[in-house]
Length: 444
Image (cartoon, rainbow, N blue to C red; front, side, top):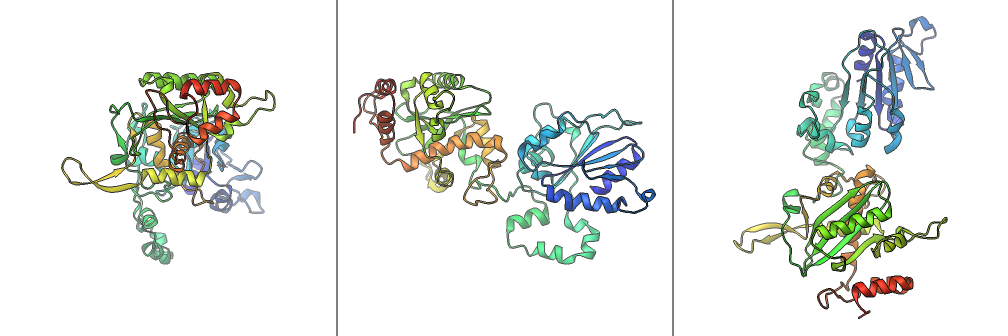
C-alpha cells in the first residue's frame, strides 16, 4: 500500500491521497515512520527529500502538488473529521478493522479535489485479512458480491493473495509461514493462512444459524404471551415484539429500528405496530426496558418512564447486567438435537425463532463481536448494531431470571409478577390506576 500511494503521488500531479489505519499506533509504525524513510524525509539536505513531511498534519507534500494524508479512526465517530474533504484516492489498510459506518462515511470524501492537472477516476483501495469488526461488509461486497441499494458490481474487484504468493516473505521469513502452518487456533489458521472468509474469529454469537433461527412469518396461537422489549435513545429506538409459547419457545415477530424519535413518537410507533399485528395494548403482558429510563432529568424532574406512561405505555424495569444478559441470549439461542414430530428424523432446534421480517436483528446478530477487554461481554462497536441486540438481551434476561412468569386469568387479566408489583407500589396514583385498568387488581 505504501508503494502504491507513492507511485500514485509521483505520477499524478496534484492528486490528493488519504491513507488510513484504524489505530494511531498502527498508523505510526506501519506507515508514518516507514514513509519518512522511503521518501528520504530525514535527510539533512532538503534537496534529497522526495516529499516534505509535515508532522502536525501527518501529511507528505510532493513538489508536483500531490499529497499523501495519513489518518486514523480509533473511535467510531473519528471518521467524521474527514467529512467535507476531497480525496481522489482513499486507501484503507486492514479494512476489516473499520466499521461499515466508517467506510460509508469515507466514500462521501472520495471525490475530485480540483487540484489535479490531469484528473484521474476516483477510487478506493483496501487491504485486509478475514475477521474483524468490518468482516461482514467487506465479505458482502468483495467475496459474496451481494450488491444492494444500487451498488454497481463493476465498482468492486477482489484480488486474492496468499502468504505463499509473497516471495520476499517466503525467502526471508520462513519461520513466519511455519508459525501460521502450526497455528493451534483453527479459525485463525484458516483466516491467515488460507484466506477463508467463511470463518469469523471474534464472533460473539457463533451459535447463530439462519437456517435454524430464522423462519417465515406464520400465525401463532392467541393464547401465547406477547411482550415488547425496547432500547430507547434519540440515536436509535429499537423495539421487539416477542411471543412466547407455554413451553418457552420465543418468536421475535416484529421489530422497530428507527432514529430521531422523541418519546411520544416512539410510544406511538410502538402502539401502532402492536395494533397492526392484530393486538390490543391490553394484550401486551409487559413492555420491558432498562433501568436508565427511570433516571430523572435535572431540568424537568421527569424520566423517560414518565413520558412513556403519559403516552399510554407502562414500562417494566429489567436488569442491565450485560454479561448475564448475553448468557441468557445464548441460552435461548442454543441449538439442540431433537426429532421431527411427524417423521421422527433427527433435526436441530432452538428456543429462539426470528421472523425474517426482523431484518436488522438478523443482520446484526452475526456482526456482534467479543469485547477485547471483557471476554464475557459483547463489544459496543459498531454502535449502530447494538440497539436491537440490547432489546433482545432485556427480554432474555427477564425471561430466564424471572421464575414467576405472568399467567392469564381470563381473556385479558393475568397474575402479577413481583416486578409488576414493585412497579405498582413505586408508582404514582395515576400509574397505579392505569396498571389496574390493564392487568386487574393485584393477585398472587
